[in-house]
Length: 490
Image 1 (cartoon, rainbow, N blue to C red):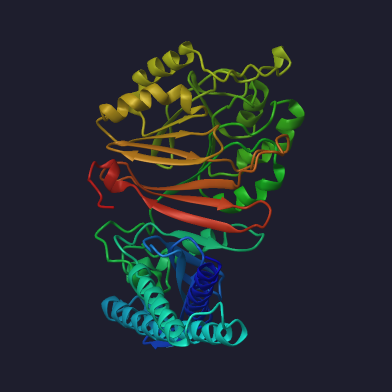
Image 2 (cartoon, rainbow, N blue to C red; image 1 turned 135 degrees about the vertical axis):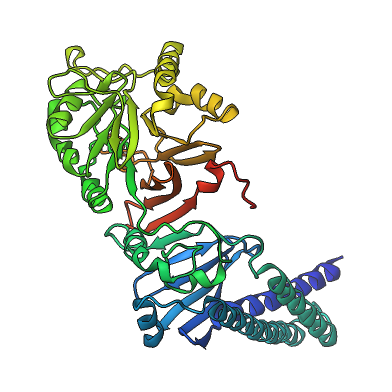
């Protein structure tokens, strides 16, 4: 029994060595290939969530696609770009995308084939060395050298075969996550915005957001391009974290800003003074009160120029109300104040209840029924207030597209249904200064839409920033087909 156990252990050591050699070689060896538009470097990084990464080190941003079943990342780095190709694009000429995609595909295939061969050799070599070492050091516990070599060969073959089957991306390659590193905001987001200007000369699937090789691995689509389309920023749940305001300001930069509540913790005059700059941050800034905001705060924001929306109409600085529906960026917007908004005459006490009363839901329902035909966007802080209305709209879609923006949960959320889009931008304050146990990332969303022939949401960019490291990711989700009720293959 002891001899059999020792032999089993010896076999397992050979197998482990062969697998380590094959996988280790795959991760250490990289291949560089020259394309007509530049140079790329291709490699494999094992022990990650399966993905295809297209990365541009020069500007420190990239795109990550799913579809890789192996726990590894197939990484394509853009090392250089041919000046002639760049000048061709700059002059507005079209790139031969099909040709470059074919070049890139052939390059990736040739490098993977080379890596598999190297991995096989390394696995056999390391497994054979362990078998030989066992034979010389522990002759009674080892297997015969011939059998040890066969085990090493078989294990290495099985390992590289698994890699060859599981590494190539499968299915529809779309909806990438854009990422970047560094403490300053959204380099990824800035790249998305700045590169949209050249999209008319590029393949349409990524709509001008990546002028790198990301677009070479995505099948060309027939969706309308997003370059030049109107956009607005969605944010919420700052909770007094004024350190996040510069981040939000850079992301907004000339765009309308829709803030869905919880700018502060209690809404006191002191807190209102800390966050009042947000009133002029967007072009314009639209605010709906949350359960951590107050009537004092909302009046101050209205006095500073913000569009403060309530279920009674646009709030004026004197406390009276104007029109129920306002035009922002060409869209008709209305908003519903949180039922637990804090009040100065109640010393800003917290009135929030985990279970919302039926009265709050019913009030929202009646209010929404009166404006449904007059709005394109509805803003409400607490999703539970609108939950029953959202359920009905999903069962019986409205006769025109409506976007409902909510907040409160501190988690990014997006759901597109026929003529309905629900967007939650998470928390731009990462829980705020009064909630240090909240481990949320900073996050916001940017909605892109069209106005003609009729208003329609086209895409939502979900941006997250790690408040500790500053690492940033930006994921674009196309929603136009789902909102129009067109089934999209996954």
